[in-house]
Image (cartoon, rainbow, N blue to C red; front, side, top):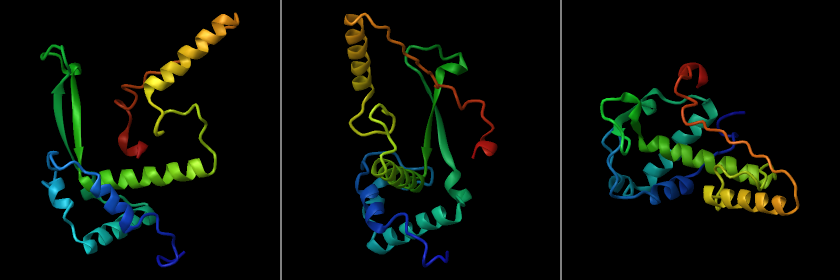
Length: 172
């Protein structure tokens, strides 16, 4: 496909919506860009961002400059400051990366729902499917099965540190 005939994976309206949803009082990104400034971008700049995002999607190349982040260690509540595992990282990516992630996720979820590929039991990345709702469904199932004298099994997976030792270059 030529660049002209390739489908556009995002458009200026989607980029504008991502920017419009920003909270003004957030800290600047690693490049020093404030949300307040981004909310005042002219239409031409938003259109150019849309072209950049589409180029990233089509070329499968993520620019090196967008891979930079500011990492700040924050002490977890009620933990000992002398022990490194009790510090959690707070990662601040450039705003452009966050828009790109939002737009890409929205597009993927739209296609998945449109094609009926997501089961109702899927709660991750699903609107109106909170953790507490999933727990309520599990409790209801256990209670119902208990009354019917049927067994209930549950598998819980904790992936809190799943990517701590991953070879990131190979993974990406």
